[in-house]
Amino acid sequence: MTLLVTAANGHLGRLVVDALLARGIAASDIVAGVRTPAKADDLSARGIRVVEFDYARPDTLAASLDGVARVLLISGTDADRVSGHRNVIDAVRAAGVERLVYTSAPRVDEIDYALGADHLATERAIAEAGVDATILRNNWYTENYLDAVSRAAETGVIAAAVGDARVASASRKDYAEAAAVALTTDDLRGQTLELGGDVAWTYDELAAAAGEVLGRDVAYQPISIEDLTAGLQQAGLDAGTAAFVAGIDDAIARGALSQTDGTLARVIGRPTTPLVDGLRAGLNR
Image 1 (cartoon, rainbow, N blue to C red):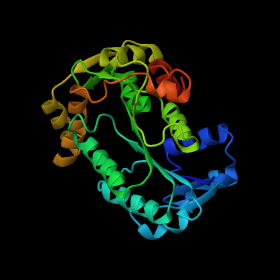
Image 2: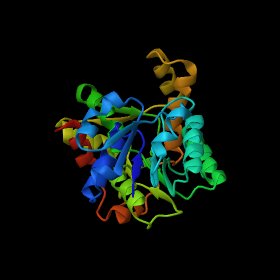
Image 3: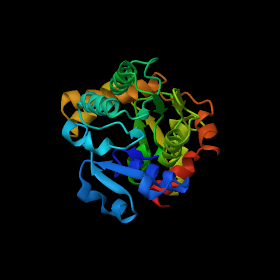
Image 4: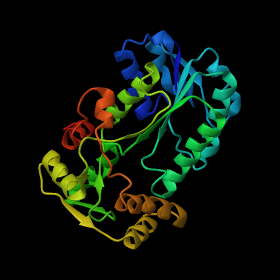
């Protein structure tokens, strides 16, 4: 059974490839879809077939899917990501791929937020296409906080406009292992899963974890959405981008990332990576 991992030279994609190999999948049965094959020489060196797979260029998709049984669609990062996702979905359907696994975002059908809207639109496109699919609604990656923690090494502060919200983050490796399970078994066929870490922590707890990793006092500083937006614009972001980024904090404040029920741990067969451990690994401390 041939498996194609899209965005395979990205942070998550590389970990999914590692997880597939760890599960005993032969390198020859893995296809690494990447936008720029020249940047994936290390994957080729491991015996993995590397193909050009650019969501925005449908001409790169069809040939790459020849003989592929299952595809992991890692969500794109382009501004018009939904169009690219639709291109992949259309190509998957035309190629007769037996299953599509998609990395979505948390609670997109419960809480309205800009980032979630793109993922919800993709989920609906998959359903409309009639493709056999597994939807993995990944909560936040602990690695998303590495920049904030690194800045706190100098400032002693983590500032955010999330109030007393909770975040059930897990490490990318945890989510990568779940994607590998979805690709290699039938256990999750046809399911939409909310995946998150075992513990939903507050930003005060994030600051405490950062302090433990950094070896210094770190405090959480709550700010308003308005102040966050203004600060982002002062840092050089245009008004639309600043509003989008600030909207993520607003969604967190409204509970978009607070849900955890142990599903991710059950899928991967072990506890998820604790916050402190994830930060320490990400910062090599």
